[in-house]
Image (cartoon, rainbow, N blue to C red; front, top):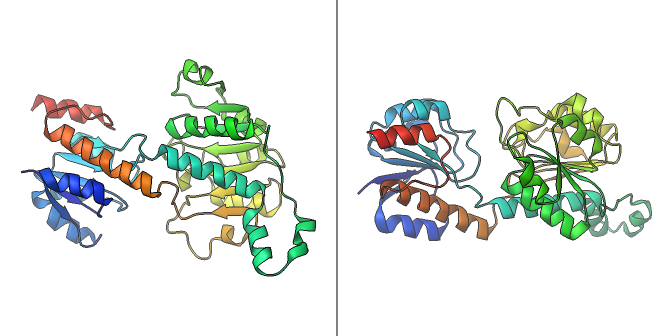
Length: 324
């Protein structure tokens, strides 16, 4: 029976399904030395929130598979896994709906200054509403950097709820995918930044996307624009974002991710009323946790039962596995 090592426990539905067919071990802590001991006889590693040290794979001579309990795999050394012939799976679109909903709610909360008005009400400052400078977003242009599952769901919901025309940049998406969903696909990040009333980011963190939104591109945004980042913190230059928000050059920002996580208590973004923050929590609804866990189970079962998993990040490694 294959041994499955989990860095953290998953939703109960996934744990129960996995334990029916595999020898399941949950690491008692995230200490690298603990993981190195436990992975020695593991056939599969399931990674949830723990960042995996690159040399961890070297301590797993039996390791055949790595599964990420999420869509993003930037905390796993994919090149190293591929070189070792270890396929890496993710959970595809299992959390896409939850993240898209969270993004839309964050954008609306920034526009309506919901947190500021909530605090004023609790503190008895009833007449603060007279100076409230919230804005409407109906009919505003939504600009997307990234038109994968999350971006596409957000586009549909923003159009249905707020009648927002949508423009997008994604060099890896065919024009037909955008057009059949009523989205204008632009081939220039600068154009998206300058035309969008709401700019929402939905790309993985790679060398190509690191600081894709930097000081120059923040400077291209409209004075009343909103920035939303629900992908990875390194996509945006946080220092530059703080400066442009402090100066009031854009309306506000909705952020679920940060360059350093957990977010440092002295991060200056925490002091700004124009920013809505959440602790990288967009995917953490109960429904999403269940979908993520069951997607992990599906991938593990497909692999060990000889089927081709749906969500393979490094197919070259899967090819090596099939050739063994």
